[in-house]
Image (cartoon, helix red, strand yellow):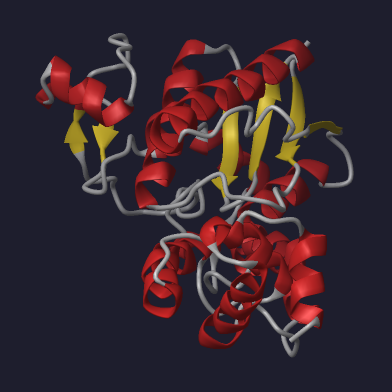
Length: 289
């Protein structure tokens, strides 16, 4: 029997799912591929630096198969690009059924959409590329290049897959990923929300929005994880003549953390993610500053 499901992976504390924009693009395209292959309906999703959320419709078995296959495919890509093994195997997943009463589907959708806002990345989900933030009640027609215009070799490079059965009228954005309008059930979401005003009400009153308001005067990250991660090799080389955190002495690791903290206004959670260390280790080194 088909049901609504909120699918959430644990937040990684010692690394990132997506280290740069290319990683996000690959993740977006894997969502498209698996949406086409599976029987589930994608209503909303968001790819964050160290975790992902999906709001899906399908059977429990279908949803579990979808998220496990997404993790498997993306872990394979990470292993090929970065040489990391078993990286996502320990990343636990919660699959939570969402009832149809008390506006629960609308609240679950808003929870997914507002993750980027709660993280301080943007002011509204429509400003975030890596998910479905700008799909709903958007009168603009999607602009992109149809898959049919790509050669088979170009499609393989684009999708990081040799799958050859995706609809050729699906559009690819200028950034290099299949636009979610092709495979997300936008109409079903707009039917749930009924009006843009009602959708904005749920966005503004979601638990993620409340978290953002509660922490408005507290320390929130000023830079994206990917921005800091891209700057780390140069920072390590200029300060210590090394290329990465793991090559540094314990004292130099502490100094690098101090530099990250003050140069990027990073908090302990963000430092742990970009350095690939545990929260406990990052907190211990920060306490010694």
